[in-house]
Image (cartoon, rainbow, N blue to C red; front, side, top):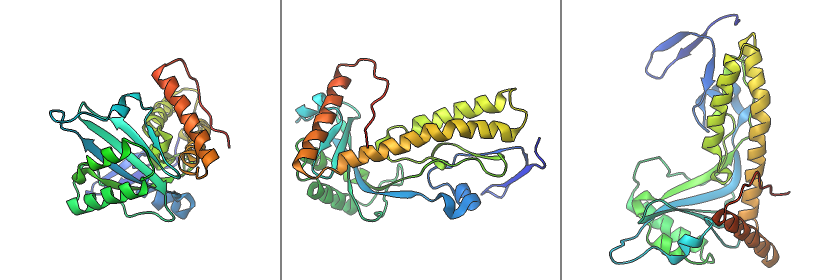
Length: 273
């Protein structure tokens, strides 16, 4: 049902000359999106940076901070916040986020160690930025493995529709990248794949363009809601700078912690504007 086939040239020099459709899934900094759509779909900087670390404890001589077992997962300060997750019996992952006027240089190449001097500098910066965050913040930072330290800048973008009459379809971070505050980036990509497969295989659609349009009609509002919600979450976690707003924010997340430790069915939690 397409007027011609798609020709795709790969980085190794090989080509695919008879593709009916190209599904773009090359991440938040998608080169295909940039090549096909240009500046019309640029990433949006969220004025937020993050320092990511991994803390390790020698259980023969020390124990994990006692606060960990009762935590929801967030340590809160004035204008910044720290997400904490226990990875194993002796390691804890943490991510400190804070306002930034411009994107920071990223040292976040996955699975690649970095110079220890950079890691040490990031630990020192984390301790300074989060100095008003209560324990176990300082303990976690001081136990961090310097070769595992990472620096991130947070970006997002509202989703866009397929291009070239539905013959180029975007899924996952290539169309709706979000920050870690969304907590749904991987989930949304999985759902995209499932729904796209359903539309492409459905006999209800007589053309690729109609199937792609139906997928976009479902995907765009679903993922737009997540982008909007994570922006509100960032504002709540890091935008509170006076005593009243900080107290209300802390009470909100404390309530979330109680619900998680005493689970009952929760359909949705919405943060109002």
